[in-house]
Image (cartoon, rainbow, N blue to C red):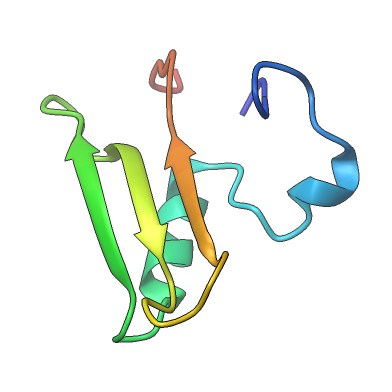
Length: 77
């Protein structure tokens, strides 16, 4: 992870607490969601990880939705 933005600006670091900062972390976050969670994703065709994910962890709750976008990916050497 080299950069995190929120609405185009660097977020307050306290907002990053618990947020996945690696692709493995994204998969762990998705696996940790309960069975009621819904999500829509687009996938990288070459590497098989999600490029964008819209998540509603509790469909009957208000303001629990979040999204994750992965951009400018390059594999580690």
